Image (cartoon, rainbow, N blue to C red):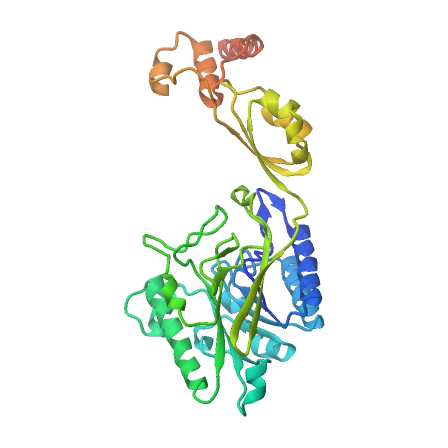
Length: 393
């Protein structure tokens, strides 16, 4: 199996469209499936980035599913908190005939995909071991609590109710044979490391669910957190296939290749995919950023740059983009600057001697740099023109 999640098809990166990068990811995904003879691709939620994806985005998912089927893999796909479960689940019963198993409804929690398992135990008995793959969609507590029969609409209670349904179905199937289990879940499990590009799952409460809710399953394929990570040997986040925030600049994006045989979980390996463009998080005085050879690698990267000059440099973005044309985020964090003015801006405004002082003070307030002689002259000329215009009325 190949464990993936959080494709977020249709997402942009600081205003830059990512559809081309996502097509590149799909190409690498298909290559991985073919090279490793993957039987099942798991997609643990957030397939789309929004509930109403664009036509080109829907076409990309359609192309990916057709190519996966052509590569000989089945697909188990669940909805995440970014998806519309109803729209993603359209024609799910028909898609099953093509090997795409969509699980977006609470009613389907205990309706697994059943697959035979090969190995020594499989050859020994009349009833060979099986693998049951359960898809748990994103469970919004306020919407699913009643359907799951829980009184408290919390992430813990609805997730516990869902896993109890799965365990009950597993128990029924395990009476006369060994049944190993894989559970897909889009949730925030305790111990997971977050990044800036994930949407908070809780409103006014704790959204994390305890890891022991997944005890006893052969493998749990989690989605929601964008960093690939192992919470235990059998409970893992695949992370997103591409970086969706600069906080993910150091991530190694990819998936987990999971082998399950007649005896259970055998092996889990990393699969790593290349991004079409690197991410760079740079910091320093503007002169050093523009001149240092150590930053050459970032010239073709998407850049987040923090300038640390004591005074905000003039035309900082234009100058930086001359070397780093794909600078998307620019921040200022002065180092070694004088002690900050303790008076409020309104207090300093009240003490301004004349209109020119007011204008220059505002300029200094919003950009942390005093007006130079040319700027003072331009402001003075503008004020004179206003006075002349007022005098002629």
